Image (tube, rainbow over all chains, first blue to last red):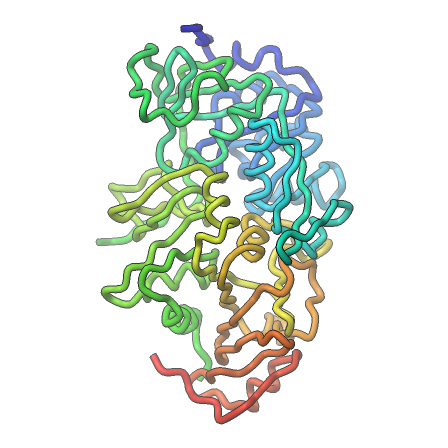
Length: 232
Length: 219
């Protein structure tokens, strides 16, 4: 088995250049590659195009990269939790491509699966469809959306092995599996790294073929955006 | 008396049917989960990747890796299943979700909905709303009848950027229940307790269709 293990986030992201296109897994702050984001913030890599469902919050996640003006363009579906993002967007400092969430997920999936475009009904008749090809299938209108591929995909998993196989936990899976497949170089950070052979092959979510580098992450904060509890 | 947001949620819960798979949007729709009739099996979908949303967890069971589409911590019911967002929207786009309940800023009399953007003011993004309204078999909107400035949200045409076209089937507001009819217009089905037809007319800018005696809502 090919050993894909690197020491840490700093080593894993060392060759990410300015102006790279990145995918970052996560939904809200759930399942985001915390270690890789910290390493990019420290490295001050700039001019980045970031494909991520959300843009973090002001002081965590991709929000940290926005604070340092490292991001040139975001491709996202929902960015409501981040005031600095909204400010940069309204002032024109940041370029943003807002994409329906299912379309975003499918564009990334298509990128990993080698499908350059597909038709979806989401956004037909809205400004999302502007400039895009539309077509009727069985009496319903659809619009064409293109795949997304990234120079580097940064994903976070619960467990991974030295061969790059990944297992996710809870709703932290979200965009991570599709992004793992759609990165030319995919970097996986995991809470628990085990030797190849320890994970049950029946229970692996992302096959290692999609992962080029893997490392044991540290110090996960796993910040919660909306802590809601019941008393009983 | 006009309904409060819990009253709107309670009324919408009457639209649920045994065996339904349902997606609840953020805000009033989330409250519908509190009013699922006893003994009815309804599976709630969270579009980030879960079927089988349970109640909010107790403090000791809070798990940062388990959230709903509103980023709230949640629990799972027996029989729950987790999946990727691509699989989740495959379920939605593929028509496997029976009912979508979501909020709106505006609905037009031909069933167009606007709920994601106020140009120059608010740009949060559409999230999963465009995918949901484009594909759900049945869409019910839960919203206030008028906005905070007193302006009707049931309009001849939406003024805000659209989320979807010709998709809303039913609207429940604090004043009543309305069906969006295929030929265009808001057909009044029920009045909220104590709300007069006159009040509904005064708060509705779009075409209102009143075909018969309008009953009061019963819970």
